[in-house]
Image (cartoon, rainbow, N blue to C red):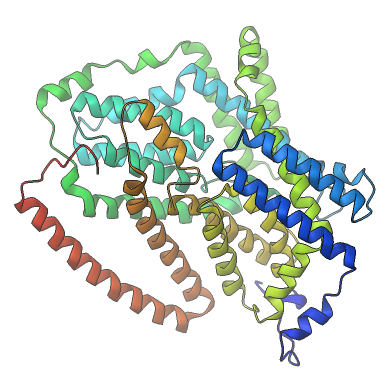
Length: 508
């Protein structure tokens, strides 16, 4: 069921990598186009990472440059850009980009209305009150809440909702908010792989590989849920001494707060929440060949516009149109690279040198996606690597291609947690705006270690399934290292307690 396509198997007569180059002879104009487009792509990623200007503007400039390369160097018709923007009518594509843009817009409208009514804030504070101010319970609740909200809302909206709420609760209980916010920032990315609508990369990957809502959840979603529980448990175990005790009078202040303060219109909140849950249910229950997810999302958005017609102008103002423009620009640049032949070269190169195992191919996409997205935006990384799935695993919709898509989604999205220089900058910036300074090195210390641990767990699981012998050897080695690390951590905690550092400093 998980066999790679014939092009991905190592030929018996293949004894030299040089044979690959003789089988991949392109016209000179293709090599020129690839070189120019790679420069454009690298400049685009570097400019986004350095925040030279608004990322949508950066990508638009690079998309225009890529367009001229395609027309003038490759000699393609100008109309090819329409295929880049919308996708093609081919059976293996079916206008994927167009459906993705419509789905993203519909989800944006539904989540914006829910956010404006205070629905997510109300639910979050109700659950936080249930902890009665106990630090460990607060840690679990705010982290799992962040994870859950991130699974249905964009990362930026999740951070805007949860980070200020955590700061408010921490100040009320006189807790150090830093450890809570660091773990929340980490959980945002784990939540972004629960559902195919949880993030832009997961949405693009699921749409391109024809992964249904249920299939995605049963693979990437369940892995994400298991990972967040493991991450919170390890964080609590290692940094328990940073979670101070709370006085009873401070708990009383928390319990007296009315969560309905967050709700501006109770009737509209119930309608928005109902629309949100009905849309999720439809994603799960209705097969894509009966009613596509983008049709469900845009129908929900249209319904909310009708029942909330007095505020439609304000809702439309809050939609992130720059994200849509950004995506369209990325579609053009990555489409140009694909037409130039770069994707075919990379994919054929990987498979020709011996990537004949689905498990190994999964791990290649998994770890390359992680390394690439640690420092740069994961959307262009995911988009440029999506065609590699089909070169290495076969046509979209096959079991192997769906598995490859899962690996790419987990790798590119979780990779943001490897460093504080990717999308994790936003939660830290929001915390700073709420007068909580978190040093990048503090997040890096937690984010890098927890992320590497999760990547190791997933990799071992894949090896145990596809190559049990290798998986067992790696498992024994990793377990031995974990035991040694646990002993070191316990001794460190004992020293800190003997030093009387119970509450910990303002930092981390």
